[in-house]
Length: 131
Image 1 (tube, one colour):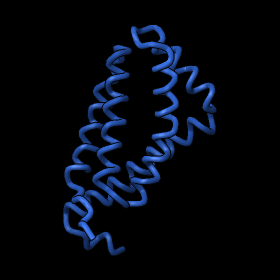
Image 2 (tube, one colour):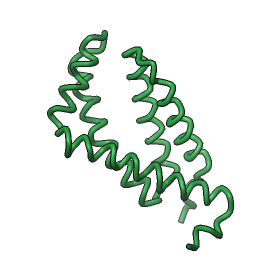
Image 3 (tube, helix red, strand yellow):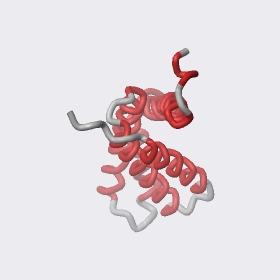
Image 4 (tube, helix red, strand yellow):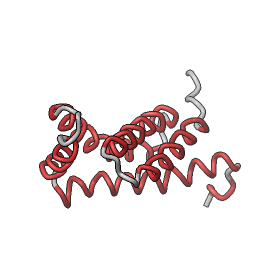
Protein backbone atom coordinates (compact mmCIF):
# COMPACT_ATOMS: atom_id res chain seq x y z
CA UNK A 1 0.00 0.00 0.00
CA UNK A 2 2.97 2.24 -0.65
CA UNK A 3 0.92 4.20 -3.21
CA UNK A 4 -1.14 5.71 -0.37
CA UNK A 5 1.98 7.68 0.61
CA UNK A 6 2.48 9.20 -2.87
CA UNK A 7 2.27 12.97 -3.33
CA UNK A 8 -0.83 14.26 -5.12
CA UNK A 9 0.61 14.27 -8.67
CA UNK A 10 2.16 10.83 -8.34
CA UNK A 11 -1.00 9.40 -6.76
CA UNK A 12 -3.16 10.80 -9.59
CA UNK A 13 -0.84 9.42 -12.27
CA UNK A 14 -0.68 6.03 -10.55
CA UNK A 15 -4.49 5.84 -10.33
CA UNK A 16 -5.10 6.89 -13.91
CA UNK A 17 -2.32 4.59 -15.12
CA UNK A 18 -3.98 1.63 -13.38
CA UNK A 19 -7.62 2.41 -14.22
CA UNK A 20 -7.22 3.85 -17.73
CA UNK A 21 -4.60 1.25 -18.64
CA UNK A 22 -6.86 -1.60 -17.48
CA UNK A 23 -9.86 -0.17 -19.33
CA UNK A 24 -7.90 0.41 -22.55
CA UNK A 25 -6.46 -3.11 -22.36
CA UNK A 26 -9.97 -4.54 -21.98
CA UNK A 27 -11.27 -2.42 -24.86
CA UNK A 28 -8.36 -3.45 -27.07
CA UNK A 29 -8.42 -7.16 -26.27
CA UNK A 30 -12.20 -7.41 -26.57
CA UNK A 31 -11.91 -6.37 -30.21
CA UNK A 32 -9.48 -9.24 -30.82
CA UNK A 33 -11.36 -11.86 -28.78
CA UNK A 34 -15.08 -11.15 -29.03
CA UNK A 35 -15.24 -9.49 -32.46
CA UNK A 36 -12.15 -10.77 -34.17
CA UNK A 37 -9.87 -8.56 -36.23
CA UNK A 38 -11.65 -9.17 -39.53
CA UNK A 39 -15.06 -8.21 -38.18
CA UNK A 40 -13.69 -5.10 -36.44
CA UNK A 41 -11.76 -3.89 -39.48
CA UNK A 42 -14.77 -4.60 -41.72
CA UNK A 43 -17.10 -2.71 -39.39
CA UNK A 44 -14.83 0.35 -39.15
CA UNK A 45 -14.19 0.40 -42.89
CA UNK A 46 -17.90 0.10 -43.69
CA UNK A 47 -18.74 3.00 -41.37
CA UNK A 48 -16.10 5.32 -42.80
CA UNK A 49 -16.55 4.23 -46.44
CA UNK A 50 -19.79 6.29 -46.30
CA UNK A 51 -17.67 9.44 -45.82
CA UNK A 52 -15.06 11.10 -48.01
CA UNK A 53 -12.31 9.00 -46.38
CA UNK A 54 -10.69 6.53 -48.83
CA UNK A 55 -11.19 2.82 -48.17
CA UNK A 56 -7.47 2.01 -47.91
CA UNK A 57 -7.08 4.69 -45.21
CA UNK A 58 -10.11 3.35 -43.33
CA UNK A 59 -8.73 -0.19 -43.30
CA UNK A 60 -5.25 1.01 -42.32
CA UNK A 61 -6.56 3.11 -39.43
CA UNK A 62 -8.78 0.26 -38.23
CA UNK A 63 -5.73 -2.02 -38.05
CA UNK A 64 -3.76 0.71 -36.31
CA UNK A 65 -6.49 1.07 -33.66
CA UNK A 66 -6.68 -2.70 -33.27
CA UNK A 67 -2.96 -2.91 -32.55
CA UNK A 68 -2.47 0.42 -30.74
CA UNK A 69 -5.06 -0.06 -28.01
CA UNK A 70 -3.61 -3.19 -26.35
CA UNK A 71 -0.01 -2.12 -26.98
CA UNK A 72 -0.50 1.36 -25.49
CA UNK A 73 -2.49 -0.12 -22.60
CA UNK A 74 0.35 -2.51 -21.79
CA UNK A 75 2.85 0.35 -21.95
CA UNK A 76 0.66 2.54 -19.73
CA UNK A 77 0.38 -0.24 -17.17
CA UNK A 78 4.15 -0.77 -17.23
CA UNK A 79 4.79 2.84 -16.25
CA UNK A 80 7.90 3.04 -18.44
CA UNK A 81 8.54 6.12 -20.61
CA UNK A 82 5.35 7.66 -19.25
CA UNK A 83 5.49 10.98 -21.11
CA UNK A 84 6.05 9.28 -24.48
CA UNK A 85 3.35 6.64 -23.89
CA UNK A 86 0.76 9.15 -22.67
CA UNK A 87 1.57 11.41 -25.64
CA UNK A 88 1.08 8.54 -28.09
CA UNK A 89 -2.16 7.65 -26.31
CA UNK A 90 -3.35 11.24 -26.64
CA UNK A 91 -2.70 11.01 -30.39
CA UNK A 92 -4.79 7.83 -30.50
CA UNK A 93 -7.59 9.55 -28.56
CA UNK A 94 -7.43 12.49 -30.98
CA UNK A 95 -7.69 10.09 -33.92
CA UNK A 96 -10.76 8.47 -32.33
CA UNK A 97 -12.25 11.91 -31.66
CA UNK A 98 -11.73 13.02 -35.26
CA UNK A 99 -13.30 9.75 -36.43
CA UNK A 100 -16.40 10.30 -34.32
CA UNK A 101 -16.59 13.88 -35.61
CA UNK A 102 -16.30 12.68 -39.20
CA UNK A 103 -19.17 10.25 -38.59
CA UNK A 104 -21.13 13.07 -36.90
CA UNK A 105 -21.69 10.94 -33.80
CA UNK A 106 -23.22 12.86 -30.88
CA UNK A 107 -21.06 10.87 -28.45
CA UNK A 108 -17.91 12.65 -29.64
CA UNK A 109 -17.87 14.74 -26.45
CA UNK A 110 -16.94 11.60 -24.46
CA UNK A 111 -13.88 11.17 -26.69
CA UNK A 112 -12.82 14.75 -25.91
CA UNK A 113 -12.89 13.90 -22.19
CA UNK A 114 -10.55 10.94 -22.75
CA UNK A 115 -8.28 13.11 -24.87
CA UNK A 116 -8.04 15.79 -22.17
CA UNK A 117 -7.41 13.14 -19.50
CA UNK A 118 -4.52 11.45 -21.32
CA UNK A 119 -3.03 14.79 -22.37
CA UNK A 120 -3.11 15.86 -18.72
CA UNK A 121 -1.29 12.64 -17.81
CA UNK A 122 1.31 13.36 -20.50
CA UNK A 123 1.80 16.87 -19.15
CA UNK A 124 2.15 15.65 -15.55
CA UNK A 125 4.57 12.86 -16.45
CA UNK A 126 8.08 14.16 -16.16
CA UNK A 127 10.44 13.01 -18.89
CA UNK A 128 12.89 10.26 -18.00
CA UNK A 129 16.17 11.79 -16.76
CA UNK A 130 19.14 11.39 -19.07
CA UNK A 131 21.57 8.72 -17.87
